[in-house]
Amino acid sequence: MSILILGTGLAGYNLAREIRKLDKDTPLVLVSRDAAPFYSKPMLSNALAGGKTAAALVMKSAEQMAAELNARIIPHAEVRALDPARRQVQLASGEHLEHLEHLEYRDLVLALGADPIRLPLEGDAASAALSVNDLDDFARFSARLDGVRTLAILGGGLIGCEFANDLLARGIRPVVLDPSPWPLGRLLPEAAGRRFQAGLEAAGVAFRMGVAATRIDALGQGYRLSLNDGSTQDADLVLSAVGLRPRTALASAAGLACQRGIVVDRLLQTSAPHIHAIGDCAEVAGLSLPFVLPIMQQVRALARSLTGTPTEVRYPAMPVMVKTPALPTVVAPPAPGTDGQWAVDESDPHGLEARFCAPDGSLRGFALLGSATARKQALTAQLPATL
Image 1 (cartoon, rainbow, N blue to C red):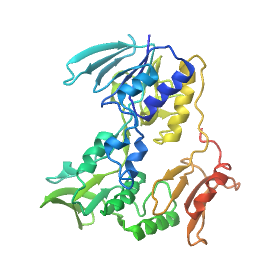
Image 2 (cartoon, helix red, strand yellow; image 1 turned 60 degrees about the horizontal axis):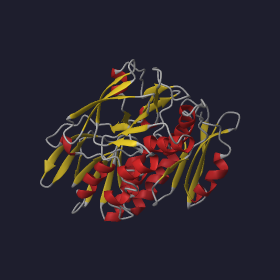
Image 3 (cartoon, rainbow, N blue to C red; image 1 turned 90 degrees about the horizontal axis):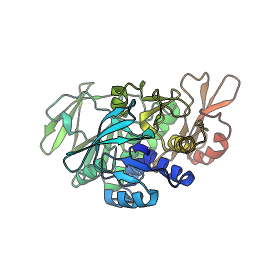
C-alpha cells in the first residue's frame, strides 16, 4: 500500500523528499492539478526583477521528480472524492479528465494548498482582476504586462507589497489599494508601517490606503476602479492580492473536521485515521501559517511519523522576510492575543527597530526595517517558540 500525497507544491514535494531520506521502498504516489513541475512558489513575487519567465522558474519537471523520488506522479488530475472508510481516493485524470481511477492508500496526505480570496466586486469587468497563486497564474500575469504603465494592486499585505516592489523593475507604476491605514497592517505597528510605506513610495510605488475597490469597469484598453470613498482609480491591469483561503472542500465533504483550515493535531493527523494535512490547507493546533518555514517543520515531522517514528511538529520562532528590496523588512509578529506593547526606535535614519514586549519585559515579537534587519538573528534567539 502506498503513501498518497495530494498536491505537488512545496509541501507535497518536500514531504516526499523527506520520506525518501528515511524510506527508499514504500510506494509513493503524488497527484497534481497541474503539470507538477517543481518550483519555489515564494519566487513568484520577485521573479520580474530577475527577468525570470514562468518556464525559467521550473527547477525540475514532473518526470525528473518522479525519477528522483522513485514515485508515481499523476499530473493534470482532479480529485473527485475521499473515502476514509475504504482508504480510497476517487481520481479523474487525462487530457479531458476522462480516466477515472480509485487509488488506495496506506496513508493519505492532503497538501492541497489554498485559493485566492475573491472580492465581491461589481462592474462589467469585475472578473478581470488577476491573481497569482501558482506557476500557471504567473505565466498568465506576466504575459499581460507588455504595454502596461499603471497596475492597480488590491491588497497591501505581504504579497501585494512584494509584487508592487517587483513591478518597478518592469517600469510599471504600481498603485496599492487597501482599507488598512498603512501597508502590512497585520504584521507591522503603525510607525513601522508608515516607514515601510515611505520607503516603497520613494522607489516609485503609490499607495492609496483607507480605501477599497467596489467595482471594476472596462475603460478603453484598461480599467476604472470605483472606490468606497467615491473616488476612482484608472489602471491598465488589476492584480488582486487580498489573501488566501485554505482548500478544505474535499476534506469537509469526506467528514473531516475543518475550521479555517483542515484541522490537524501536532502529529499532523486529521480527524480521520490515516489522513494527514500539511501546508497552506492545514490548521495545525489552531495555527494557519502560510509560510515556507512552518511547511519545512511540518514535512520533517510527518516524514518521521509516516516512516515509523511518531513525531510532533514543533515551530521555533520563525521571522518572515518581506521581499521588498526598496526597504528590506523582517517581521516576527506576536502571537494573537499576546499581552504587551510595541516600543519603536526610529533613531537610525536608515532603519527602524520595533520590539513587542510582554509586561514582564520579555520579547514576544519584532519588526526590523532597513539597516536594523542586521539584528534579525540576535532578536530571534530571544523569542519563545511559536509551537
